[in-house]
Image 1 (spheres, helix red, strand yellow):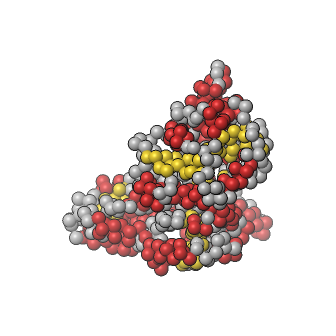
Image 2 (tube, one colour):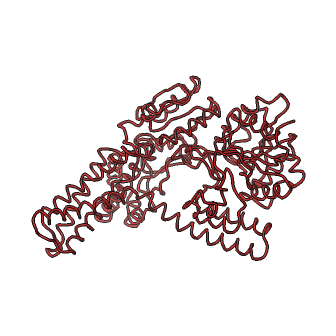
Image 3 (cartoon, rainbow, N blue to C red):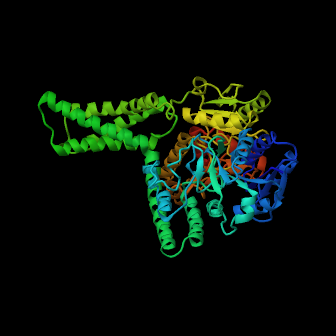
Length: 629
C-alpha cells in the first residue's frame, strides 16, 4: 500500500466532515487498494464517531476511551497503518483533489526525503508562516513567543523560527515541519521512532522533525500543493492559553534536546517571551478594538488646533495655551465618549449610525464646553466651528477608509446579504436553512458558480461556499475572498454549518450571526447593555415595586447588572443546542414570562426569538409590565 492518511479528531465534527470529504476525493486518483484513511478519535462527545461510521463506512475509525493527546493518538494510527508513506493530517484541514498525487510524485523522486510539508492557508485566506520552520533555539523561540519576528518577518536573525530565508513559493529543504500536514516515509519512522508521547499537544512535530534530520534524512517544504488549515480549533493560536500550552511543549523539548546553559537559556527565553506576549496581546487587542476611536480622536484634535490657528490668523486674537488644550481635550474626549456609547468600531459601517455618532460627539463637546469656567474658554466661533467639524469627522474618516481600503472596510447595506456559491443540490438546502433561521431579515444571492467575481462578491456580507465543489475550489474561494475582504464560510456536504471565515467563532458548530437584528451583532448587544444600565438606574431611584417580581427587582440586583455580572432579561436555556446562543451574563429574569420555562420546546422558541430578533422597546415594555404585575 502506498499511502495511509491518519486524522486525530477531538470534538470537531463539522471540520472533520470537511477533512474526510476532501481527503477521500484526493485519494481517488491512487490505484484501488493503494490507500487508506484512518480516524483516531480522542474520546469526543459530539457524536463524531457515530457520524463517521454512518456516513463513511469505508473509513477506519478507532475510538479511544480517553483523550490521550495528539502524539499518542497518532502513534496508534501509525501502528495500524499499512502504507509506505504516512500522512498525519489535522481534522481542521481541506486538501485539494490533486494534493496527494502531486506530493507522492515529488517524494518518490528523491530517496533522501524523510518528511514533507506544504503551504497552508487559514480560514481567512492568510498564508500560515508555520508551514515551514527552523529549529527553535532559545533565541528563535524568544523571538517567536515575544512577537519580535513580526518586526522583520524576512530577517533570518529575528525570524529563524519560521525559516524566513525560504520564500513561501519556494520548494526547499527545511528543518521543521508542521504536524497539521506531515508527510512521512515509513522507513524514516522505523529508524528514528514514532512521535514522543510526552508531548500532549504541540512540540511533537518539532521533536520528530529534528530526529528525522539527525537520522540523515531531509525535511522538504513543497510549495506546489497548498491546503487549507483553519487552525486552532482546540486552542486559539496567538492567545495566552495557546502560549502556555506551547510553553509546556517547549520545556519538554528543551529538556530533551538541549543541555546545560542552552537548556537554562531556553527556559528563561520562553518565560520572558510569554510575559512580553501577554503585554503585546493586551496592547494589540486594545488598539484593534479602539482603532476607529483613536483615528477619530486624532483627526478631531488636529482639526480643532487647525480651527484655532485659522481663527488667530484671521482675527489676530491669540488664545492662551490652557484654553486651547482644554478645547482639544474636550473634543477628543467627546469623540471617545460617543464612540464608546454608540460603537465607533462596528463593522461594516452603518451610514445613519455613523452620522448619529458624529452628532452625539458634537453635542457632547458643546455641553462639556459650556460647563468650563471663563478662564478656560476660547471664542464662541472657534468652539462652535470645532463642534461642527467633529460632527462630520466619523463619516468622513470611514468614507476615506472604504474608498482606499475596500478589502477591509465597507458600508453596511439596509439588509445584510448572504451569497451562496454551491452546486444546485446543495444550494437549495443552504438557502432553505438560511431562510428558516433568519427569514426576510437577510437577502440571499444564489451565484451557482464556484468562485464569483470580485464585483459580485463585494455585494455580499458573507459568502457560503459549498464543500461539494471540492477542496481545490474551497481553497481558491477562501484565498480569493480573503484578498477581497469577503467573509467566506465553507458549508460541509452533509451538515448545515458555516465554518471558517474572517470573523469566525472558535466552536466547531459555529453558525451565522444571529440574524440582521440578532444579539450576535455588536450594536444589538450594546443596545441591550444600555437597556440594562437604564433599568438598573430606574430601580436604584424608584425601588423594586410591590408586584410578584419585587424579589427580583432589587437594588442589589441592579448593582450586579450595572457591574456587568448579570442582565435583567436572560435566556431560559435547557434545550439541545443552547450552547450556540449569543453569550450573555446570567439573567435575573427570563425573556417571555420572566420565570424560567421548564418545557424545552417553549424555552427554545423564546430564546431563539430573543437571539435572532432583539428589540429594546419590547424588552423595556416587558420589564415595566413585570415590575407592575
